[in-house]
Length: 422
Ligand SMILES: NC(=O)c1ccc[n+]([C@@H]2O[C@H](COP(=O)([O-])OP(=O)(O)OC[C@H]3O[C@@H](n4cnc5c(N)ncnc54)[C@H](O)[C@@H]3O)[C@@H](O)[C@H]2O)c1
Image (cartoon, rainbow, N blue to C red; front, side, top):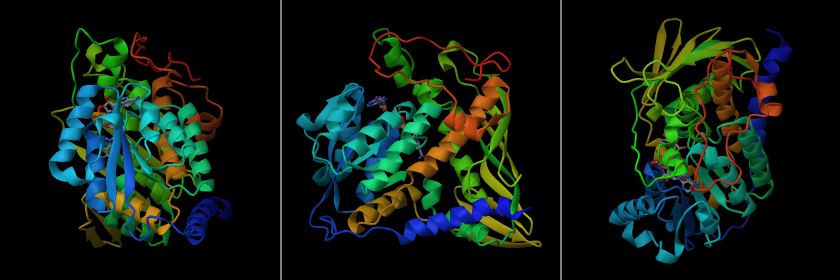
């Protein structure tokens, strides 16, 4: 392995320390804790409500003051849930509760300091751009886009946030989980030598489907069942497996240079499952030649596996959501007992806002989301695809510019060798 091949890892480590060292400390109205951080929620579904709860649990210095969802039943449900445990810090009023596609801007205009973005990922790039333009700190759920055009928007907005001294924390919670942090620090310190191979998995069961009502337009139907439409979810390799792909990128010190993948739709063939697939297998190749095999499946009744493995020239690591190990010469060191990462990510975000410390995960999560999109693009088309081409030259843009709750085309299921690479 040549010096040039090692340089990217060193660069990543150096640039991470530079970011830490150049962390800005500015005088800040939230520092003393007298002034509450006012939070708005965009996308009041399961995780949006959960993230708002986690944020309230993370700090006594935050309150929820505005929220929106496309649909009234979802905002009502979320508000009731939040008020159940946090009545004194949920200050949302009928005037600060919004529905429809324009609700997001109205939340941003409600005098908030920070916003939680928890809509389906197809909408994330636009919402992040709006939030940064409005000067708000951001917690955004993963993944952060479903196509290269969206990724480019997220990267631009994240760089703008840097200049505006705004924090952006992403919902790739493993990055805030102690055992992952401790193990990857050891990898970065060279304890397992140079990483040369890896595997990652999200093989799990089937998820919810919310049915179809006669009164719904096609847009409402797709937005309510967003998991099953690639423009909204990215497919499950992006929506779910991005967590494990992100860990591999973290351990490898950057994103892969190319992907070669396959997959299909063997069980969920009924049109109710939209146009996503049910299984993928992708080989990601990194700058130093290391290869990571990624596998993901959504199919109930099978053996599940959600984990990551990295092999280095001197040892290896194994990680999952609960614990991990470093193995060197047959000696195993165990790491476990991380605090709840869903709360920890908000503790870290609130601390960065209160301390005036710059914390911006935008570009990093955009790269990991792009990696997952790259895998999907390779599998859908049947072609090997380079990361740089996909990020910078692909014209794939799946999300409508001005969505309305009306008609919407139903896009076909991708077929390798026929689906075009654009
Ligand atoms: N970090 C994690 O472990 C984790 C876990 C679950 C979900 N997530 C992520 O959280 C996000 C939300 O997932 P969820 O499970 O809460 O889904 P959900 O369907 O329960 O909630 C999404 C909500 O967004 C609303 N919505 C859709 N488009 C909107 C728009 N343009 N404006 C306003 N509201 C809109 C929907 O009506 C819905 O209520 C996804 O990106 C998902 O991948 C992350």
